[in-house]
Length: 410
Image 1 (tube, rainbow, N blue to C red):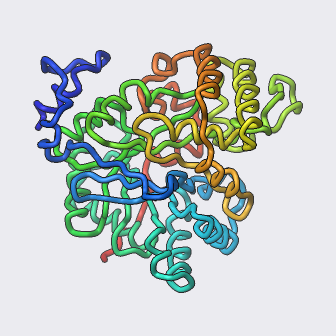
Image 2 (cartoon, one colour):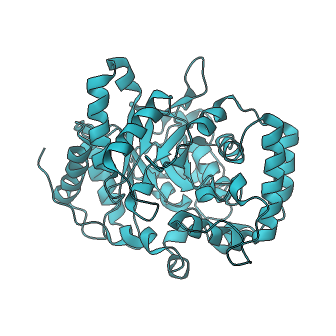
């Protein structure tokens, strides 16, 4: 299998692999874990998408509710208000929730929420609700016992027999323990404790290695926006060859891609909206690296024209544009549960069609920005290169060292 994937990926000039020519034809269907994923849109609508690898399969809403804002720094979250908000999102058809072991009480909130769904909604509604979580361990030895214990904690917190999707993150590629961890996660999948295994913030080279090791991942979660088009360079090509799908975050850049920041000058103290969340601070640094605030304003003005033309908001255009990119199955939008809602804007994504004129006008502005691949590196490198890491808000770094979790036997 390794040789086949090497050949198939040899067309990517930035990474050197053995092989003479790409293999993109029928022989790919004979490669066990690397066979193409059938990414299917549900019949009669474009709201949901099914991603699968072999017999592993999950259907998700293409706009996912990102629950990182429960981890602190975005405002106090009231438990009851948060759960009520989750029910409203699910009732509106936005029924996929993305969380992590280190997003504060996110997994616990999901456990309360899913029990409300079980009691108060019909069984067919329950089938549409999906809870995706992440595991971000410290760089310790990845034994079966250690991996199993941590996954059991998430299962208990979320009150589910099997996790719909476990997205795995690893900090240090020099430590190859990530392969051991993923093999143990695959074993747990075979035992029925995880339905699908996926990745978060892995780069193209390591995704390649993981596939060569026969690990059937269905997706990789990466940062992707108008400003950050890195996933459409190396990553998208490998994904199209192997069928692994992309789930994106940072698509509205923490709120920077919105009318709120249109025609503002952040160089003047107190003249514009405050950058008062970790997300806004992080993505403002991305804007600075890409081309600065003036060019970003040109982008916002262009997006406003497109949004006005279609009777939608800038965030709706931002999400739809990324969903239209190759290999992208879904895009996350952060939810401030009980504090604010984006249900209307999110649902508008499913009826929006960006025409050639819209796309051309956006790309004209994008061409003026810098290539973040050259500045930052491949997908996820912003979390691994120390100089860039030190620039991220403290709350973004908390999970670097993992979280102390009590193993639960289930």
